Length: 236
Image (cartoon, rainbow, N blue to C red; front, side, top):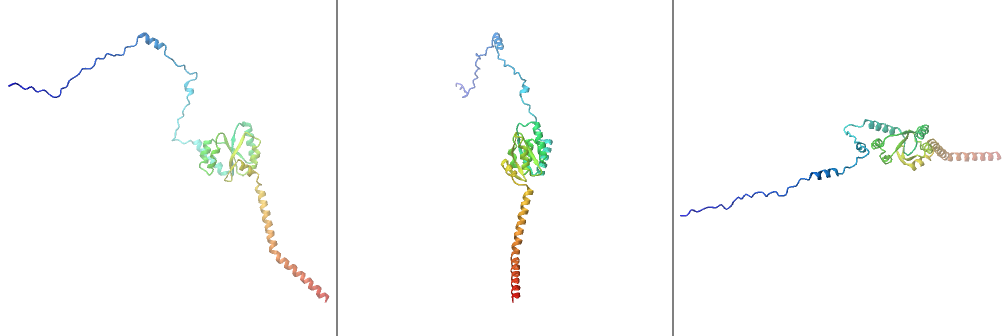
Protein backbone atom coordinates (compact mmCIF):
# COMPACT_ATOMS: atom_id res chain seq x y z
CA UNK A 1 0.00 0.00 0.00
CA UNK A 2 1.43 3.33 -1.06
CA UNK A 3 1.94 6.06 1.59
CA UNK A 4 -0.30 9.05 1.28
CA UNK A 5 1.57 12.37 1.53
CA UNK A 6 -0.17 15.42 3.20
CA UNK A 7 0.53 18.99 2.09
CA UNK A 8 -0.64 22.05 4.09
CA UNK A 9 -3.10 24.44 2.44
CA UNK A 10 -1.14 27.58 3.55
CA UNK A 11 2.52 28.13 3.06
CA UNK A 12 4.64 31.04 4.35
CA UNK A 13 7.10 32.21 1.77
CA UNK A 14 9.74 34.74 2.76
CA UNK A 15 10.83 37.21 0.12
CA UNK A 16 14.09 39.02 0.31
CA UNK A 17 14.27 42.87 0.28
CA UNK A 18 15.04 44.71 -2.89
CA UNK A 19 18.54 45.73 -3.50
CA UNK A 20 19.12 49.48 -2.87
CA UNK A 21 20.36 50.76 -6.18
CA UNK A 22 19.72 54.51 -5.75
CA UNK A 23 21.94 56.05 -3.08
CA UNK A 24 22.43 59.83 -2.94
CA UNK A 25 25.91 60.59 -4.01
CA UNK A 26 28.01 62.83 -1.90
CA UNK A 27 28.55 66.34 -3.31
CA UNK A 28 31.96 66.94 -4.81
CA UNK A 29 34.37 68.78 -2.54
CA UNK A 30 34.99 71.54 -5.07
CA UNK A 31 31.29 72.19 -5.48
CA UNK A 32 30.85 72.40 -1.73
CA UNK A 33 33.51 75.10 -1.57
CA UNK A 34 31.92 77.10 -4.41
CA UNK A 35 28.47 76.97 -2.79
CA UNK A 36 29.92 78.04 0.54
CA UNK A 37 31.70 81.00 -1.07
CA UNK A 38 28.65 82.13 -3.06
CA UNK A 39 26.16 81.86 -0.15
CA UNK A 40 24.13 85.08 0.36
CA UNK A 41 24.86 86.92 3.61
CA UNK A 42 22.24 89.52 4.59
CA UNK A 43 23.69 92.91 5.58
CA UNK A 44 23.49 93.82 9.24
CA UNK A 45 21.32 96.84 10.15
CA UNK A 46 23.11 100.02 11.06
CA UNK A 47 20.98 100.32 14.23
CA UNK A 48 21.28 97.70 16.87
CA UNK A 49 18.37 95.30 17.01
CA UNK A 50 17.97 95.89 20.73
CA UNK A 51 17.29 99.57 19.98
CA UNK A 52 14.75 98.81 17.27
CA UNK A 53 12.68 96.39 19.31
CA UNK A 54 10.53 98.13 21.94
CA UNK A 55 11.06 96.98 25.45
CA UNK A 56 8.04 95.22 26.79
CA UNK A 57 7.42 96.11 30.39
CA UNK A 58 6.16 93.30 32.47
CA UNK A 59 2.81 94.29 33.92
CA UNK A 60 2.18 93.04 37.37
CA UNK A 61 -1.60 92.81 37.60
CA UNK A 62 -1.54 91.65 41.18
CA UNK A 63 -0.01 94.91 42.48
CA UNK A 64 -2.13 98.06 42.39
CA UNK A 65 -0.65 101.31 41.13
CA UNK A 66 -0.49 103.41 44.30
CA UNK A 67 0.23 106.66 42.44
CA UNK A 68 -2.80 106.21 40.21
CA UNK A 69 -4.94 105.39 43.24
CA UNK A 70 -3.74 108.55 45.02
CA UNK A 71 -4.45 110.73 41.97
CA UNK A 72 -7.95 109.25 41.66
CA UNK A 73 -8.70 110.11 45.28
CA UNK A 74 -7.42 113.66 44.70
CA UNK A 75 -9.62 114.12 41.61
CA UNK A 76 -12.69 112.78 43.40
CA UNK A 77 -12.11 115.27 46.23
CA UNK A 78 -11.80 118.09 43.67
CA UNK A 79 -15.08 117.07 42.02
CA UNK A 80 -16.94 117.02 45.35
CA UNK A 81 -15.65 120.48 46.37
CA UNK A 82 -16.25 122.23 43.02
CA UNK A 83 -19.47 123.76 41.70
CA UNK A 84 -17.92 124.47 38.30
CA UNK A 85 -15.77 122.04 36.33
CA UNK A 86 -14.66 122.85 32.76
CA UNK A 87 -12.65 120.66 30.36
CA UNK A 88 -10.11 122.35 28.06
CA UNK A 89 -7.94 120.98 25.26
CA UNK A 90 -4.34 122.18 25.42
CA UNK A 91 -2.72 122.57 22.02
CA UNK A 92 0.56 124.46 21.52
CA UNK A 93 0.56 126.94 24.38
CA UNK A 94 3.94 127.70 25.90
CA UNK A 95 4.85 127.12 29.52
CA UNK A 96 5.07 130.86 30.26
CA UNK A 97 1.68 131.63 28.70
CA UNK A 98 0.16 128.70 30.57
CA UNK A 99 1.57 130.03 33.84
CA UNK A 100 0.12 133.50 33.17
CA UNK A 101 -3.25 131.88 32.47
CA UNK A 102 -3.05 130.12 35.83
CA UNK A 103 -2.45 133.45 37.59
CA UNK A 104 -5.37 135.14 35.80
CA UNK A 105 -7.73 132.34 36.76
CA UNK A 106 -6.42 132.20 40.32
CA UNK A 107 -7.59 135.82 40.87
CA UNK A 108 -11.18 134.61 40.34
CA UNK A 109 -10.72 131.50 42.54
CA UNK A 110 -10.51 129.25 39.48
CA UNK A 111 -7.79 126.61 39.61
CA UNK A 112 -6.21 124.46 36.89
CA UNK A 113 -5.84 120.75 37.60
CA UNK A 114 -3.89 118.42 35.30
CA UNK A 115 -4.40 114.65 35.59
CA UNK A 116 -3.54 111.76 33.23
CA UNK A 117 -6.45 110.67 31.07
CA UNK A 118 -6.49 107.15 32.52
CA UNK A 119 -6.81 108.62 36.01
CA UNK A 120 -9.57 110.98 34.89
CA UNK A 121 -11.54 108.21 33.19
CA UNK A 122 -11.22 105.97 36.22
CA UNK A 123 -12.32 108.70 38.66
CA UNK A 124 -15.21 110.00 36.52
CA UNK A 125 -16.38 106.47 35.80
CA UNK A 126 -17.21 106.12 39.49
CA UNK A 127 -19.12 109.43 39.73
CA UNK A 128 -22.20 111.09 38.24
CA UNK A 129 -20.06 112.68 35.49
CA UNK A 130 -19.67 109.58 33.32
CA UNK A 131 -21.08 111.43 30.30
CA UNK A 132 -17.94 113.63 30.25
CA UNK A 133 -15.57 110.71 29.54
CA UNK A 134 -15.51 111.26 25.71
CA UNK A 135 -14.03 114.75 26.27
CA UNK A 136 -10.77 113.43 27.70
CA UNK A 137 -8.82 112.63 24.52
CA UNK A 138 -5.31 113.96 23.97
CA UNK A 139 -3.83 116.77 26.07
CA UNK A 140 -6.60 118.01 28.35
CA UNK A 141 -6.83 119.76 31.71
CA UNK A 142 -9.54 120.84 34.13
CA UNK A 143 -10.51 124.30 35.38
CA UNK A 144 -12.38 123.98 38.68
CA UNK A 145 -13.87 126.48 41.09
CA UNK A 146 -16.00 126.35 44.26
CA UNK A 147 -18.19 129.04 42.64
CA UNK A 148 -20.09 129.14 39.35
CA UNK A 149 -17.98 131.78 37.57
CA UNK A 150 -18.48 130.96 33.92
CA UNK A 151 -18.24 134.59 32.80
CA UNK A 152 -14.88 135.15 34.52
CA UNK A 153 -13.57 131.86 33.12
CA UNK A 154 -14.42 132.73 29.52
CA UNK A 155 -13.00 136.25 29.86
CA UNK A 156 -9.71 134.91 31.25
CA UNK A 157 -9.17 132.27 28.54
CA UNK A 158 -10.08 134.67 25.74
CA UNK A 159 -6.46 135.85 25.62
CA UNK A 160 -5.18 132.28 25.13
CA UNK A 161 -6.53 130.98 21.78
CA UNK A 162 -4.28 127.89 22.05
CA UNK A 163 -6.70 126.27 24.46
CA UNK A 164 -10.25 125.33 23.54
CA UNK A 165 -13.22 124.79 25.82
CA UNK A 166 -14.81 121.37 25.24
CA UNK A 167 -17.55 121.33 27.87
CA UNK A 168 -18.07 120.88 31.57
CA UNK A 169 -20.44 120.88 34.48
CA UNK A 170 -21.93 123.70 36.58
CA UNK A 171 -23.88 122.83 39.73
CA UNK A 172 -24.32 119.18 38.69
CA UNK A 173 -25.61 120.18 35.24
CA UNK A 174 -23.67 119.10 32.16
CA UNK A 175 -23.05 121.90 29.66
CA UNK A 176 -21.52 122.10 26.21
CA UNK A 177 -19.31 124.94 25.00
CA UNK A 178 -22.36 126.92 23.86
CA UNK A 179 -24.03 126.11 27.16
CA UNK A 180 -21.13 127.78 29.00
CA UNK A 181 -21.49 130.87 26.81
CA UNK A 182 -25.24 131.06 27.47
CA UNK A 183 -24.71 130.56 31.19
CA UNK A 184 -22.15 133.37 31.31
CA UNK A 185 -24.71 135.81 29.85
CA UNK A 186 -27.12 135.23 32.72
CA UNK A 187 -27.26 137.96 35.41
CA UNK A 188 -25.51 137.38 38.70
CA UNK A 189 -27.21 135.80 41.70
CA UNK A 190 -27.29 139.11 43.59
CA UNK A 191 -29.13 140.89 40.77
CA UNK A 192 -31.58 137.99 40.43
CA UNK A 193 -32.24 138.09 44.15
CA UNK A 194 -32.82 141.88 43.94
CA UNK A 195 -35.27 141.41 41.07
CA UNK A 196 -37.09 138.71 43.01
CA UNK A 197 -37.34 140.89 46.12
CA UNK A 198 -38.64 143.82 44.03
CA UNK A 199 -41.26 141.61 42.38
CA UNK A 200 -42.43 140.22 45.71
CA UNK A 201 -42.60 143.73 47.23
CA UNK A 202 -44.68 144.99 44.31
CA UNK A 203 -47.08 142.07 44.59
CA UNK A 204 -47.39 142.59 48.35
CA UNK A 205 -48.14 146.30 47.90
CA UNK A 206 -50.76 145.57 45.25
CA UNK A 207 -52.41 142.95 47.45
CA UNK A 208 -52.50 145.37 50.40
CA UNK A 209 -54.03 148.12 48.24
CA UNK A 210 -56.71 145.75 46.95
CA UNK A 211 -57.62 144.62 50.45
CA UNK A 212 -57.79 148.20 51.79
CA UNK A 213 -59.60 149.63 48.75
CA UNK A 214 -63.15 148.94 49.91
CA UNK A 215 -62.66 150.20 53.46
CA UNK A 216 -60.90 153.34 52.22
CA UNK A 217 -63.71 154.06 49.76
CA UNK A 218 -66.34 153.49 52.43
CA UNK A 219 -64.60 155.94 54.77
CA UNK A 220 -64.41 158.52 52.01
CA UNK A 221 -68.12 158.15 51.20
CA UNK A 222 -69.16 158.40 54.86
CA UNK A 223 -66.96 161.45 55.36
CA UNK A 224 -68.46 163.14 52.32
CA UNK A 225 -71.96 162.27 53.47
CA UNK A 226 -71.26 163.74 56.91
CA UNK A 227 -70.06 167.00 55.40
CA UNK A 228 -73.21 167.31 53.27
CA UNK A 229 -75.44 166.72 56.30
CA UNK A 230 -73.57 169.41 58.25
CA UNK A 231 -74.11 171.93 55.47
CA UNK A 232 -77.85 171.20 55.35
CA UNK A 233 -78.17 171.63 59.14
CA UNK A 234 -76.49 175.03 59.04
CA UNK A 235 -78.72 176.15 56.20
CA UNK A 236 -81.89 175.31 58.15
